[in-house]
Length: 69
Image 1 (cartoon, rainbow, N blue to C red):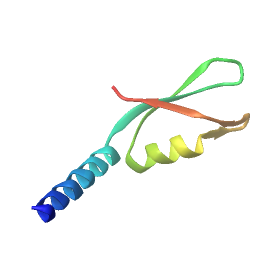
Image 2 (image 1 turned 180 degrees about the horizontal axis):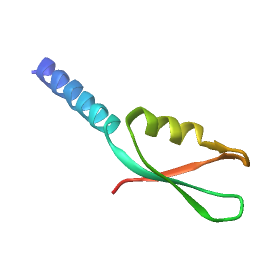
Image 3 (image 1 turned 60 degrees about the vertical axis):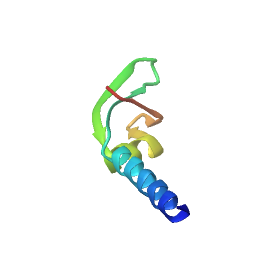
């Protein structure tokens, strides 16, 4: 019984992480002048990288905000 529960729990975690990786979100950052700059839709690893590293242009590095549909 305990092995079945652990197997089921491991599968649930794997499924959640796998699904999350395929999610897509619309992303933007707030520019220095206060305007919101749309970056478009990002998915998977690109989404994670953008959220973690931010967006950099000639005026600096900005924190990126992404939200689902």
